[in-house]
Length: 246
Image (cartoon, rainbow, N blue to C red):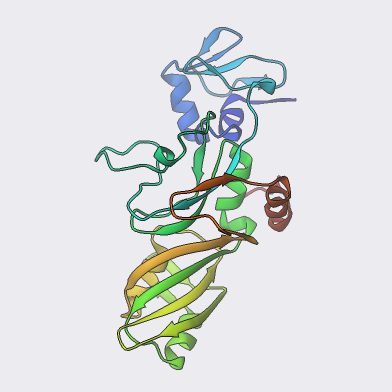
């Protein structure tokens, strides 16, 4: 089946559609040996030879890879950092395929991060339209009361719109800090930290523990494993439809 070239590049997890278009303008993409400089060309990934920066991405040459990484604090969720900080792919030295982070966890956050070269899967997990729940353990400063938890469940208006968790419950608390389990459906930049800042209980530690029904299990910080087929299928089924449009 023929599709626009930038869509195919995005599906293989190489880059977003917009970035793929720029890659074409920069002369980094070829089809059947011919350099493509204008976006919009339609090709068949099962038949045509598509290369990005000389590397073959089409046909059976690329196998789908899905990983679960327990991200440590102090790693950047990107493929390159201008400040030369450690990046998450530094932890995947034994993975031969080029994989990309699915969504984000900021530099100071920890926990479950999916990595894949499947662009459709990545889009489905990240985009709020698919309503994939993400669960976090959040350590906040201060002793939370029952009324504080009720207020957290009601959400708040932030500078970029309203925010309300799917669920929140207090796991434990002492005089100086409290642990809250929080489930959300969206991933706006630093949304959890900004939300708790608005409650005057800033985040001291943030750990993602699950995406959908996929958890960290026995993975230690910095370790990764390949996802089971049933786990990938579970997230796709949870989304409602792999082909859902945003």
